[in-house]
Amino acid sequence: MSIERIRNYIIENAQKEAEQIIKTSEEKFRNDTESAKLSLEKKYQEMLQADEKHLREDMKRYLGRLKSDCKMKLLEVKNKVIDSVLDRAIGRIQSLPDNDYLTLMGKWLAKVPDNLEGELFLNTRDLKRITNAFIDDINKSRKARISLNTMAIDIKGGFVLKTKHYEIDYSLDTLVKNLRTTSIPKLNEMLRLSDADL
Image 1 (tube, rainbow, N blue to C red):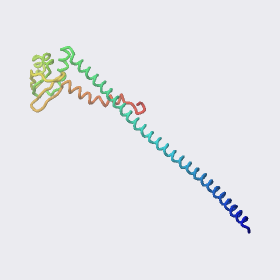
Image 2 (image 1 turned 120 degrees about the vertical axis):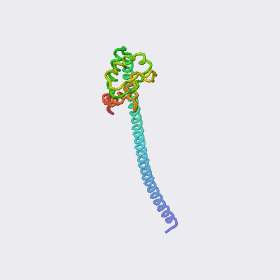
Image 3 (image 1 turned 90 degrees about the vertical axis):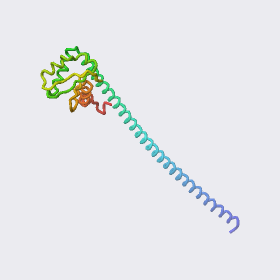
């Protein structure tokens, strides 16, 4: 074998080997590129799903806060309506003509057990309306005597009867407070909105 043939043989083998290396490299490059592309696509999908999940959670929290705020506003409106109605009721009772107001006070005093003795406390306005003659009429049908205390107390109307052992509170303040307490659950039931309405 001549040197020329050996050289050609080496070059031929080197060329074949180079072609094989290039072919293998190209195949590896395509596989690596495809693998990287699939990996990037997978990471992109995972990031997209994670972002969508966070957005859904954020939206759920926001909607929950919004629903809670709406319920609080609705509760405020309900309370304002109830307070307004009760304030108007107090105003109407306070502005009753004297005879009607005294009739109402007489009915309330009739509910006090007639064996209780005590002092009747009123507000300034009612001290002018309720006379000793009115108290004497009340006492005619009672076993124990009620006396009128001339010192005014801070109530909207009605009375507080102080006996030896306790007080009987028929003030408009307390009556309305009790009425509000018993009425709110009923009114809330009447005004209840389902979650779908919010």
